[in-house]
Image (cartoon, rainbow, N blue to C red; front, side):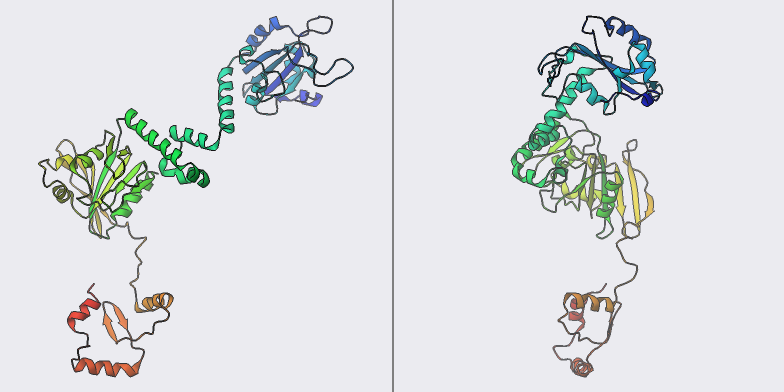
Length: 439
């Protein structure tokens, strides 16, 4: 650290280092250690942090006229001061506090913590390593050293060890592993990484029995926007979500996402015990899966199905005597979706039934459904891109909003003649409906 210039001495500083020999070559006191505690006490309204240590085992690194390389340096003090944000001080006044010349003081231009660490020669392997117990400070210096050691160990540790530590601490979640872990590392250490995630889940299962999970039941006809609504609810809460597969093993790929969307769930997908356990808003649980039971402790569960809740429950539990209330009281929000409306009720604990619904316009799919109907020209454009090798040849018919104009006049009369003669190749009402089903 460079000594402060005369010009700099007129400036106010917030961090300063003092380095001074304790005695001169004749044994005269240069720095009065016995007065130091009183000085620091008298300036406590100005000083935020201080630290000092006596260096008495430093050696000279070069040979000069006065000493040889490797000789011990005279004992000297390193004193660091950090002033309060609203109390910067001028170097010339700080020097007077300790009865020193200004050239013994220098501003700390780097990081405060780094300057503190250097006082025991942390990360300076070519210098004598002082012990943290030799340092006097008005803050937790040992904690600073321990944190520095942890960071150093982390930096020097193999990448996989750092990743495993972050998995076990919950900093890396399983559903984000492809985003937070380098691809090569993920492939090379896949077994170790999977074991870390499995251990984390098992530990959570033992230590985190309680949860606060909200459950939403969405029913409606196909194409009404149930899945889209479920995703929008999760996104609105900034929750990563998992959408269940269509197989019987609905949690096959679930990896602890905070939102679980049981999409288009079928009555045969789960049994009574598993469904009621999984939907319990207060108790975390494991659910049967093909290869291993899955621990479920998410913040939000959304079920979507074409079946109303009463019908769904009856189909799932037709062989059980459990009342439908067991399911309803777990699904705090009940949503019915139509093409034009959304009907929402919430569970009334007092009356033990759903509240009267409130109706909302169904605009969920507005961004996905075009305003204009598909025309024959749209079909032609599509076919031209997809199957440019086809040659158009149609009757002049209006079918379901499409107007199909003939292209080859020489074939129209032949087609009409065949139709008039009731030829077996004509389009009867029956096979016409099969080709172009009514909308």
